[in-house]
Image 1 (cartoon, rainbow, N blue to C red):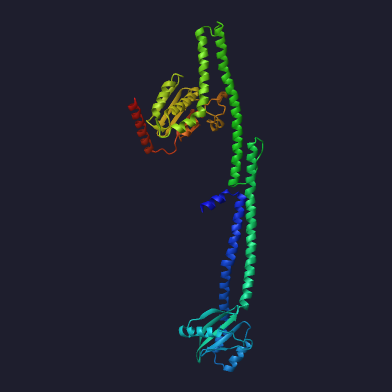
Image 2: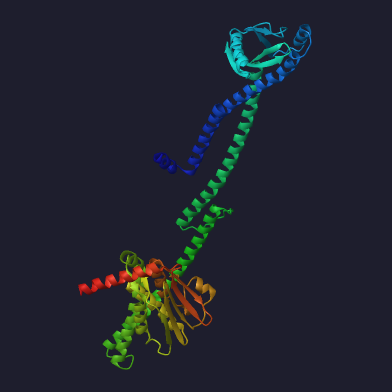
Length: 476
């Protein structure tokens, strides 16, 4: 079964549909000739018995009347039909009532009727059956009749002339109707299959053209899953194009940002070599070189860290937890000197986050750097179970800016191409958290969280954190 399933999956969609249609045809013919044909035969047999029963009722009425035998025989001769033979079984002999057209007997049938009549006489039940002779079928029905002269056995039989005619009529009409329904379903299926394959081919062609860098459009007028896939592909292509343009622009601006400190360092170094101090004294001129070298190092460090942060986290952070309260306190202590006029408010619990301490430290530093850049009077830090909020009273963000806040190649406020928030986004997602930025009543807030915090997880994190620290102390 697994091999058949695997082989079926290797086929193209068109080949799969052709195979399904073939199996449907096989099932149809098997259904028609095995199941439906057998049901038709059973239906015809019941119809024959019902027909004989209805014709026997009139004969029973005559047999139970007070008319003379001559009048009864005249009735039987007058009412004779060419299909059904009616008989009376007396003393193990079969006496045909209507002899006008039925004076020939079928070999062996009389013995069968006599034998079945004995069962009727004994049990009083109606006996019905089929007798076969000479390649033909004979249907018979035998029943007990109570008359004024005593009980009589009435037997009737018919050959298969009428049943064959009825069967041919039923089979032809059923077959024609079934064939019509089948081809109608087949036509509907083919139209449906084409409606699937055609847009899929459109999507395939679109992907191939996009892969070759060609400007092409995709129009799939569907509102089902295929239409959703097509829309998603178009949106993805538009988003990739947008990011590629932003990336090119960012690379251009980063190149310009890198050239500025390099040019300054080179210019100041050459001046000092010639005995000229552009900033007044040698110490001040060297300080300028050091500052620009630090700027250059920070930019290069961010670029390198952005490219390898996800690899470092996923390869080294499994099972590692970090005390976020310690990290935040350390970052606050280091960054508080950036702007001494900003009040830092804290409301923190001892909370453990999954992930490496160094990656979380860089994350908090980047958010704090952004907060110091825009805050007016305060920065507030709230740390609770699986939730960290860093807010400030700086200017609110535009709605368009919020949607692209963590994109790596988006231009920020003042035309800046900082990578700090992109690094934040990568660290948070790699550790299976969420991050968002939004406007508050008096400023902006960045939140790192998990939707469904669990106390048990926090307990396990604390135990893992202590075990790790204990091992580290033993090594020391």
